[in-house]
Length: 150
Image (cartoon, rainbow, N blue to C red; front, side):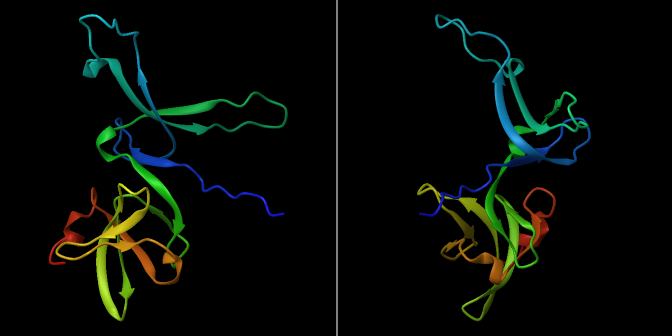
């Protein structure tokens, strides 16, 4: 009997301190206990972080590393890679030939719990077996110009 294989649950986002992308585990944290009567979560109560495993030597304590991130650009890993072996993330811009036609679109998470390629003025394409034909060429945050004219 075969074992169950789960995809890697990872996220990436831009760090607040330097704007660089960081990958790891996404945590949304409210820094104080909110009183249920007449109180609500305020922006200064919220903390959005990406946590990574730290590094250690044999038999030494292993810490975690936490980065404050911008929640506006959090992207989840799809569990898939492109034809070059590069991880495909939500909001990545991808390109390739589908049904003998060159397409460009961005990766979106659908309400039916599947990832698909969103294209302006056309139907979405289910993101499956993408490692055969799809290439990550950028993302909608750093390279929005790649979506122009599609």
